[in-house]
Image (tube, rainbow, N blue to C red; front, side, top):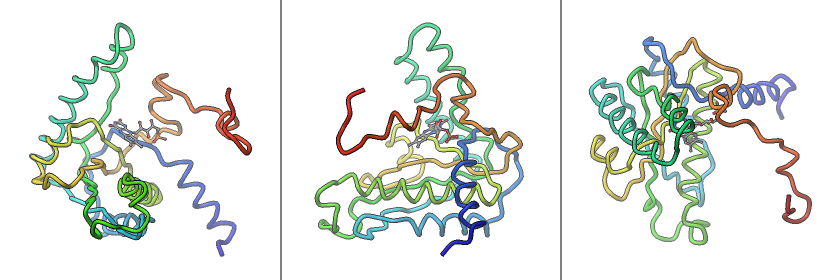
Length: 213
Ligand SMILES: Cc1cc2nc3c(=O)[nH]c(=O)nc-3n(C[C@H](O)[C@H](O)[C@H](O)COP(=O)(O)O)c2cc1C
């Protein structure tokens, strides 16, 4: 059973967690990194397959190569927007890979547990979904430790495999930048930039069947 304070602490982490792209150079103690990785490792996973690995990157040279891959992809993605929206997209800061003292590449091994992982036989993407649960655990734990984290997904997977020596069958799911920050907003950065706003929860809840809007 959770005490009232413990329950409130869980909701506090959920509501205050933010995606952060600006970091201070202060180092993050490895003890804390180990704690947040242990939180990740206690996530649910399909058939308990635990498909994740965590590549902890502190080398500035490697971080700069990752930043290069992300920036190349960011510029390529601008093709999806035109005019004012393109300028706005290009003005968004979508990663802080070079600034953050650490980046953790979270990977998913679809072969872990053999070819018939319980539950994954029906929906193959459940291995990726399990990895996403690990990332969310890590994010909430980091938030409760006063750390900032940013999810970077702007990249071609093969660029990341090349840079980090990841075998071809392993999926680099996320680059998570981690560090301390003095810019921790209350609202999502994309909301503050007027890019997107939180939808009304009531519009997303249906009763008994799918409801057309
Ligand atoms: C799967 C996934 C991929 C994301 N990729 C990026 C990214 O490449 N760059 C970025 O700036 N934010 C990225 N984000 C963060 C989202 O933009 C952010 O979660 C969203 O705007 C809501 O803000 P909040 O996390 O602060 O609540 C990603 C988030 C998720 C869940």
